[in-house]
Amino acid sequence: MEDPYATVEVRNPNAREAVFTAKVSFKAGNGFTLIDSTHQVTVPAKSRKTFRVAVAGAGGALDEVDHCEVDPTATADW
Picture 1: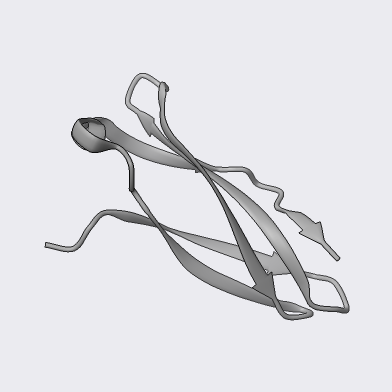
Picture 2: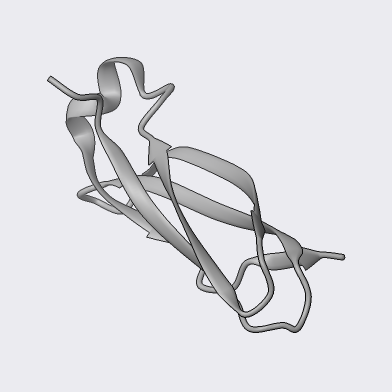
């Protein structure tokens, strides 16, 4: 069985390549945050990049993961 993960897409509408910081949280059904993670991804100009975020570090709480939430705005580092 494959380890659980979320798929995240970061879009770069800018005219030059940038490194974006994306924040992903895995939550329990009651809204409690089980895992917070931050990922840096390089996205070419006027393009998008899709990547997987593993549900890592949940330990015994893995069965409690109900959904993930992604900060809708990734910050860019030029």
